[in-house]
Length: 621
Image 1 (tube, rainbow, N blue to C red):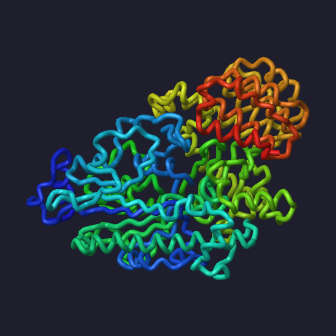
Image 2 (tube, rainbow, N blue to C red; image 1 turned 180 degrees about the horizontal axis):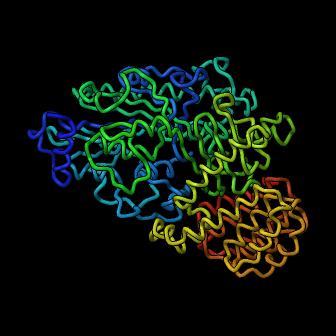
Image 3 (cartoon, rainbow, N blue to C red; image 1 turned 90 degrees about the horizontal axis):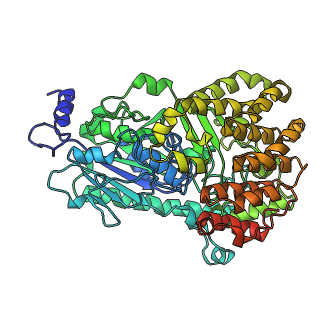
């Protein structure tokens, strides 16, 4: 009996349990072992500068190692929302880490384990979820720390996720006292400190301490594999190991650099199912795979029809498109709000080139993020910058970015040499820009609207909202792209957008002004008028931001008035972010915030409290 025929038999049970007597081969079990906050850079299996992980290496010996596996987002909730849906997050309104609200699954789609469960699989999650979607009741048989494949019915195939938190960011939030009390097993001279980090005792200790956690995590991976082996399940089970996004050393988690997106991934392939992969056991796959591809891959391995709505495509299974996988080595990344820190960055990597588009380049990477700066290494990095003790590469984290960045990540793995302005790279920059923007417009990307507006207008059905407003969104992208051109050439276009009846055209025109900085000084009169009279409060704030950045007007009165006048926590957070951002680039303004004037609903928001705490301390100066 041919396997294609078997898949047809499996499909018959899409709404009932499997009839194990009706096919020669049962659908495989599928296990995911997921470690938190690991980029590929710290494992010798993937990088010479990494540490040994023998248990993960053993999985690779019986399967495939993916040299180019990528999270689409450098933070948990957004990455996991992408995985569970098979959809790009900026299309579904799930691109913000910590969500303002849960959003429904798009286009009548279900979280992918529901399709497995409906087809007879026992679905178990042990135990982190962290989705920005509203979860249906049909997703898991069990989702808890006690979840196990052992509780399924006899002969029932299972899908099991085992989450390992040992390497989570919180593991490196230690004090100097902890350093003295806990020497590392990893020798601090056994690796190189990446070139954009200062080579200090603290950075070396943090690096070594993190590698110790990776060694511990690898042992836990081995324990799960041994448990499967003890139950006689190895030869019926695909085992995926991957990191849930990039690592936790400064400038990694929360950033679309390779250390935030490029993850380790290995898949152990059972002998009887090796016809479902196109590689020999023990081989390395060079093709690109992304988290958006995981859902369709699992469904295809299980013989379940992949919903047409999904953005991803399978990289293992019976329906893989080998030609596309080999020729289309592309992955996309996105970074928006991380807790209280707003940003808007998109990236595309194709082959060895990585293109990063910063839509608000005046937001420095080092902009305060409460959870990040609980790590001593972040605080030391900032102190060394203030004291003038960093070189140019190490200082870049604290300075405004270029709107466009291009890196050759094979020769510059830590993205320290921006090639975007190299005359010889113009053609490559244009191709990468067009590739990224075709993707952004195709979704379309909802982040072209401020988050608070999406909360008010779009979250009942974000995908539908995007489809209905695609023309407008694409127009905002075209306006944002004016910052990439010569100011003299586009000045009149910016003027026109500043006069637009569409408030979000004005919004993006103001951001373009801020991106040009002093070059756009001729537009100050228009910005002053908008700061006084614009009917959309956030546009007054953005106009004040531009005037403040170029040091022609104190933005505090406009921004404080807007803050006191809103009952929206997400709008207040954006306003506070503008205040913090101005301080981060060295402007002298004082924001004398009267807490009692802030709406109670706004004051009660945790993210708002974090940003207020930072501003009150004056650390932004």
